[in-house]
Image 1 (cartoon, rainbow, N blue to C red):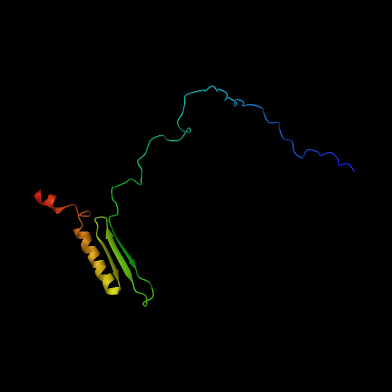
Image 2 (image 1 turned 90 degrees about the vertical axis):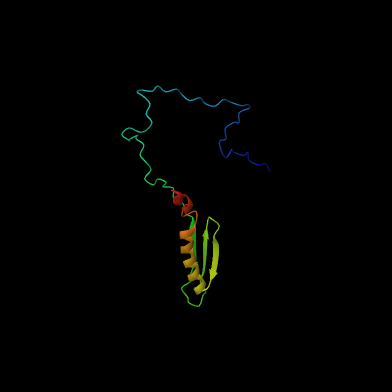
Length: 120
């Protein structure tokens, strides 16, 4: 019994034997001057409407107060100057909120030194 001849399933192109140069782009002649943008689009640079005003976050107060009265609340107050306090319980969290407000009025990063202004 003989097997029938196999027919090719796909047309596979022959592989080149060596490296070949890539096709070079065709040089186009330019009519008119070069434009940076599409015609009709204003090219004036406008100021950024969301410009940086120099303000950065310095002191944070994070309070976790679940809706259920059976769960104990907690809070954390921290600042980039090194102030870092934690509180657990309702009374302690209320005291920490007050202390955070006091720190914001006394923090050297939030209130640039009163020493320099007192001399002026």
